[in-house]
Image 1 (cartoon, helix red, strand yellow):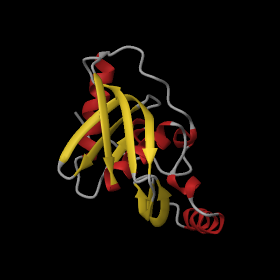
Image 2: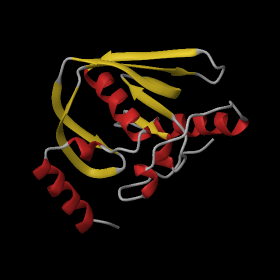
Image 3: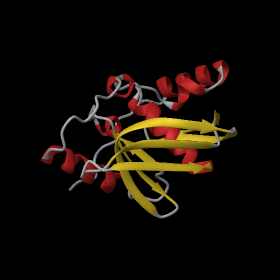
Image 4: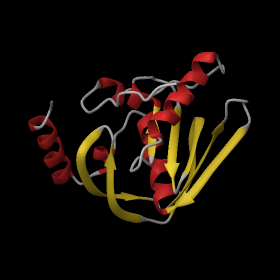
Length: 161
């Protein structure tokens, strides 16, 4: 379908919790294809629907050469801890060490309404948490230590297009 423009902070769509998908319509099929097309680029690990301006609970991923999507994802379980660099397409140019669970599991559905379970450690675990945060109206900057968050927001204000 199309590679879509990425919304960036402070776009209010990024701070608005996404609505569940109640019915699999042609528009939802188009959304999934746009998410897949847009995430299919080196360096992109995940992309939530609100990052392309759509307030529905869906995200795509691109981890270790595997590209996919999930609708209505719910973060079911996390365990362990990792502390490493994290970035975001909606916060261009900034990478900060961010604390996340090492393992995460998400449950949702596919376009046929069948259950999908995604889980993993490391980068996969980080991506699952990052994208479900987006769908809940949060960006990774919310998870930073207070001083780093201030620094990041100051950078964003001073470097807006």
